[in-house]
Length: 211
Image 1 (tube, rainbow, N blue to C red):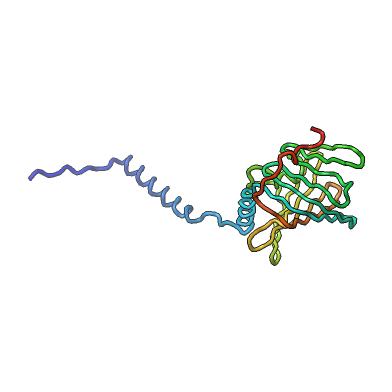
Image 2 (spheres, rainbow, N blue to C red):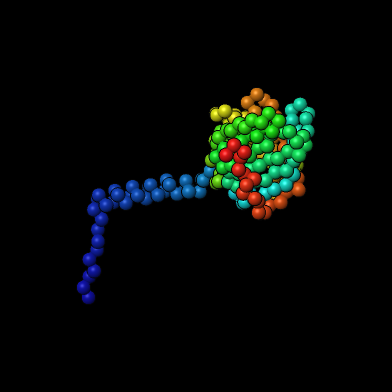
């Protein structure tokens, strides 16, 4: 019976094989040493999924300003980019309309209209098309208390600088109110009530008066 030839490794092949084994041995532990996901990252992922799942929402709101002034009205939101806050009391408060690229403040008492780029306001985090707070460099704080989860984003540039803190009810993660702090340190707290999701909203509500 003929003998089968025995394949031998050259010195170069032996060195290459040894180097490959050493490399795989060094890399293998790294696959098991992935950076653990923090609680902050998990919560930011949950909030991102919640916001991305919002198509439309409408309801009522109550507003409390820094000086103790209270007001109320109705709101309409259509993501991405669109929001309307219409005041019932007092009726002379400006109407806020986000129309996609711009935020417009319509002052009925003075008959004036002011416009700001949406991307330069804290509201952009609430209304942007694809929310991924884990990669958002504007996030500056995450806070937790019994039944509450809140996240704060800061707009550092533009004409409408400030902070937006979104407050969610837990468990279940539902947006309940937000707090806006402007560049002068004045705060406005908005509490949402009687909210309805995934409803049809008249497109004309998001057309500003100056258009």
